[in-house]
Length: 408
Image (cartoon, rainbow, N blue to C red):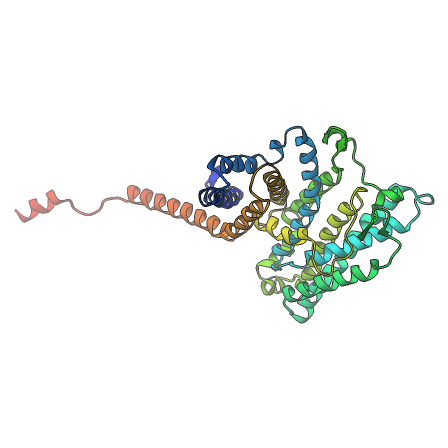
């Protein structure tokens, strides 16, 4: 059996495809900066070059606030990693989970109700924290299983059900928290829920907030980023090393064939969407029970951005759970770049959003690029095999000299 080289491996091809997508999006963003400098009177080319440097540098261009911004970047990456995993797992089963925003909202609501309702004077805060995290995951799983059941039992397109469930979740959350005792009146934030630290509930930081601080201001980072990384690794093992993961992927490739092989395709569809919902809900719970965040309950007009950005993270990672970690952190890296760009140049932060949008656009070609590499390598191998066969083939026919002699 021929041993594959490093560049012939499928994982290498997918990684190169993702990097090319990122490079394409960043190059388009640079071109936009240069065009704005060329056609805008108050923006010089020096300003454009400075903007390019800030976009590439991210938090590393913020001087003494570098560690502070880096810590917050990792903290904000946590829910995005979870929603990215949510979308990626559903993709593996042949489903498009566009319902991550609704699952996120239901997880946030459940975790906050548990964290703020149970008195920490009667129950240890650590127990309440665990219960709040589990409540968020369970609520997200239940909400995610709804489009799964519609798909499995009634063959209703999951995209339609997910879109409807997103807005239903937004209105449910607004209805539950409206005029509740959990609204943050103390800070006159009438559209926000109080921080869980008021109930002595906060995710452990293990000193990370002190490590990633800017002078006297500490970042929001906690152990949630390590939980997200651990969950991503476990999902990678489950999808690639277990029978259950094999069944989920087989259902995604061809549910009729998996049914013929004896697999319960309906169960796998429902479980896949439940797992996806649990991941989105857990990501929301970790953000809400950080202790420093006040959740916006008035959500009937907007949906959480991390729910939709999870699609971007999954596409950029080509649905690889390990890749979702890096793609999510990279997307938050660009968000920090956008904020620094607006603060230090004449450009606004929407340039970074443009780069993210272009990366999303190019990520649609990631599968094509991977297929192109595979076909090219396959064609090279076939050509080499044909050459080897021609070299080894015996020459049975007469040569020209012998033919001339016979004619003479």
